[in-house]
Image 1: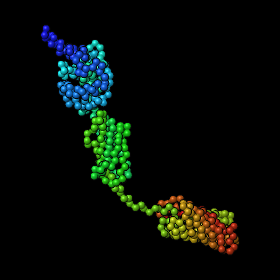
Image 2 (image 1 turned 45 degrees about the horizontal axis):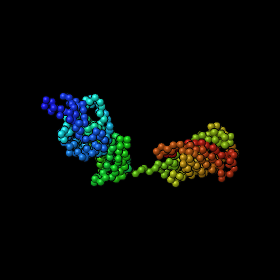
Image 3 (image 1 turned 120 degrees about the vertical axis):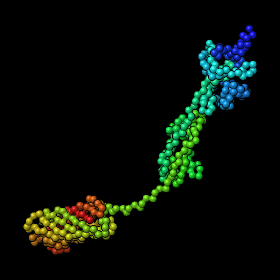
Image 4 (image 1 turned 180 degrees about the horizontal axis):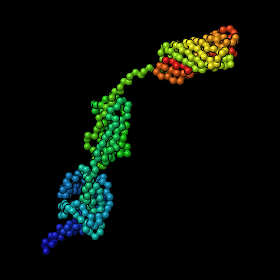
Length: 399
């Protein structure tokens, strides 16, 4: 009989359990005396009963956790839950005869759910989920889970650049990041720039204007302020820009390249009389007078009419000044034409020569152009414009 009474005192004063540690009743000997425990009472437990809480954690084998528990419960997010029949906890602390007792692997085997409070405590990368029945305040550890640690992955491209070249800082490959910070230091260790990062904004642009060596260091924080290990850093260099060679002198777009050049020209023409056609050609020299602007042209040549007598082959010569106005040019001066027809009103003599042309291409020192030429008689007597002018179309090649 005494044995039965002794067992009843052990198991029934605080709660009733089966041989399999199935709890069927709570509240007879609570850890905290309150039949209607409030969330605020949890903070009071941590303050007023800190020594007993510490004893319970040590008995449960979690003595290293007690200080984190006592600190974090002051600001913990306490939620109300049901403790249903069949729910288990890893351990539960209660009081028996004013002493703290801990029971491991407890199963709630009551007939009805119990109202309880739940909250979590974080320590050393683990999340501890606690549950405290409202009827007794017995602190119970329900579950332990690993919190994924943050890992820092830092990329900087390019790692070498000249001053002013943007460098891209990238933390996007980091894992379990809640926030991050990137610090840029110079060779002396002085902080040059810092960047705050988030998973949504995980890149930044770095511009460095001073030649030298720099270190880009990143730190990543995860949940519960977990910090990534040291060593997430990249060395970068800002190099002096190469001195470019002096640019070549600009190529002349127009006019001659050399002070003295040779030329050939030729094409079809019309001899006034009955505007008889002719084929003509000349050769000569070109002297550059004003760079890129003004040339002197001297040419000699002749022409052959396409019809026979009374038309005859002619001799021509020009002394012209040529003005370059971009790709186009105009020229004017004096020339000489021999008699081109055996008729009394056709005579040879001095011509006033005008040209209008356009450069077609330039290749190295050579230029090709197309021009029109008008030759009108002047000075020589008895040479009327009506019977002695000439119209020429020519292609000129300067080399």
